[in-house]
Image (cartoon, rainbow, N blue to C red; front, side):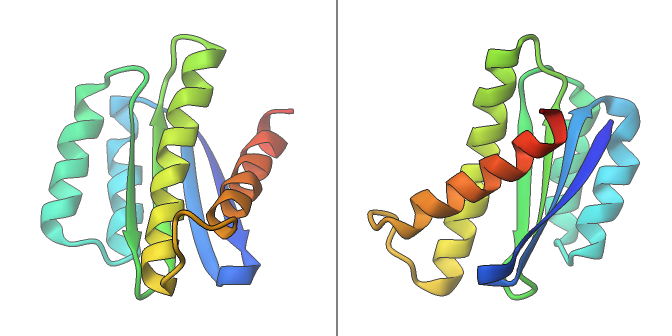
Length: 126
């Protein structure tokens, strides 16, 4: 599993991303969730999700008050599935930031946010 830290300075938001999640990585992901202040219920839900070990899936949890998110993307079966899964999970991060800051999802700002997140993801693989 590969990990990456992304910091969106404009929003003072930290995102910890895990790529290539396998069931053996469950404890590391769950510990990260605990560190950002996720509820016990959320951590247990994530644990169950991770232990399934299904490809082409992911999860995102955010602590809005702490301005932190944890994203985990499982192994994917193709580059296309990777892009689909990563962008799906990053959109959750965008909606969490917009929720906290009162940004309308129909505005341009969320689109820029999504672009910045995708640029950050691409830096680790390109």
